[in-house]
Length: 167
Image (cartoon, rainbow, N blue to C red):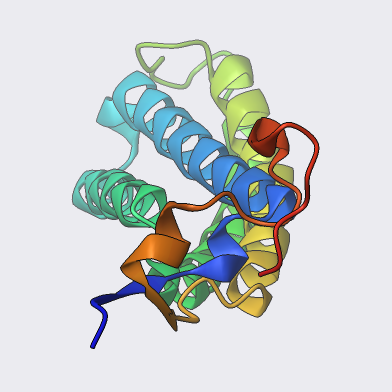
């Protein structure tokens, strides 16, 4: 009886790799933007600092799991992104309203904080789209193959000198 190993055929596709990279990039970008807005407007966030820090930590952890091909966090990422897109859409204009005389100035200019908050909305919507696309790609599908077959190049892999091996 030959040894068998698990192979994940959907992870070898270029589309899956691109989607994974996009989701990781969007999660890291979101975490960075949220961190900048949180630190830049720390004095004016009125108790929402811990929620923002929580979002940053959760997004970083999700980026780690997506990098390890875990598709289970993708629907969670999409759901949190929808919630944060709504919050950012409401909070963005409020930062612009603070850019007047008589308001306490946060660490960053309120118009910059407003712009970064508004930028978060399309980033979150892209995160929803790419996370759901990644979930549809079924990264978790496993196929048992013989250890010898697992070492052979797969269909579309050009390292075999042009010969296409059957899957």
